[in-house]
Image (cartoon, rainbow, N blue to C red; front, side, top):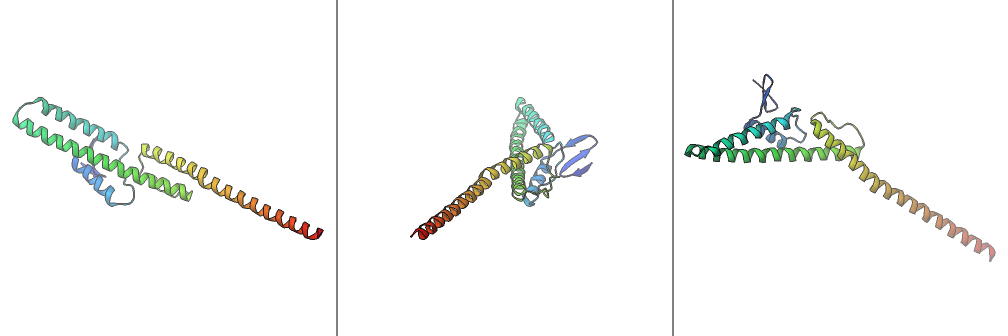
Length: 171
């Protein structure tokens, strides 16, 4: 087995562990940049949670005292896994939104998108488009309107000066 990004690989099987999820969350918390995950990360997590839920159901069907303690432990672990995965997702989501804001503000392609999963890349691109449209609709239209107002005021001043000069010549 070799470890790759907190996920243990052995042959074709991807095994996610509670400890690996905890480590991924810790790294995502402690580093500013988006951390690299395997392309199949979310589907692997879904499978892992499904296996944990299946084990929990087995404990629920067994009425022994030992099974009751195992059920409580499994419920607690499953709740923690959900909390970790949710926090990991939300931290990644926040970083992706910040990446989109930076890309929209700078209008450059120097943002490193390599850590994005395919689904995250779609989210990122849609956020950039949304932010660009909002920026265009608000800022550019605002500045265009201000320029037009400024030109209008300049024209009014020029008309007023011309009117004053005409009155002065006629006097």
